[in-house]
Amino acid sequence: MALNIWIIYAITVLGLSLTPGPNGLLAMTHGAMYGAKKALWTITGGVVGFTALIALSMFGLGALLQASSHALLVLKIGGGLYLVWLGIQLWRAPALHMSMQENKGSARGSSLFRAGLLTAIANPKVILFYGAFLPQFIDMQRSLLTQFLIMTATFAGMEFVVECLLARLAHQIRPWLERGEKLFNRSCGTLFVLAGAALPIIK
Image (cartoon, rainbow, N blue to C red; front, side, top):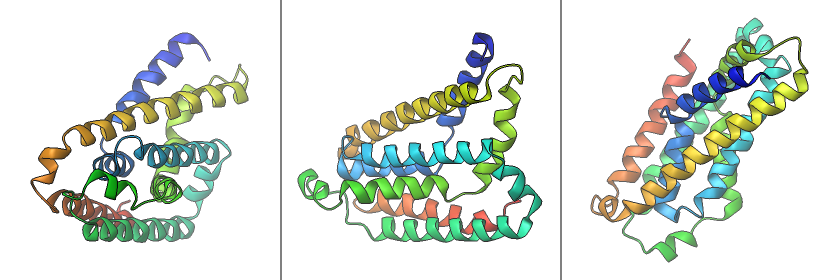
């Protein structure tokens, strides 16, 4: 991949990472609830999920989904239901006035990793987006595998850094969030439910 193309790609990816989305919201929520260090499990799960989606797009699943509206609808409904379920769990989560130590013990790393992973892959429209976005930066005269590795590593790195910053920010402003008791959890939970409900009907 030529350097000038990579720079444009990296800037674009940074803009995408800074755009509010379910994984960034989840990283921020877990950062506030469990601490920035524990939220690394969530963030890593999300990055693995995004990497898998990029791989699927590169291997043509995006084209398959575009050709089969039925398959896309099934995936959209499944992803929407998961986001709704996640939102309900956040709504019912204990208020943030719990001690940090108590919150840390209330979730295992594996469950946080799974939440990040499933949130990343819950939206099949991401696959379609990657299927349309990534080819814009591919040079057919160069090694496709090398370009795939570079683009994947760039995206994963950008997403990881941005979500870490969100988790740390949420942890730093935790005292202000605590004043609203369950308001933070319920606000985030509501956003997940709305996203999950809208996912199957967005074209």
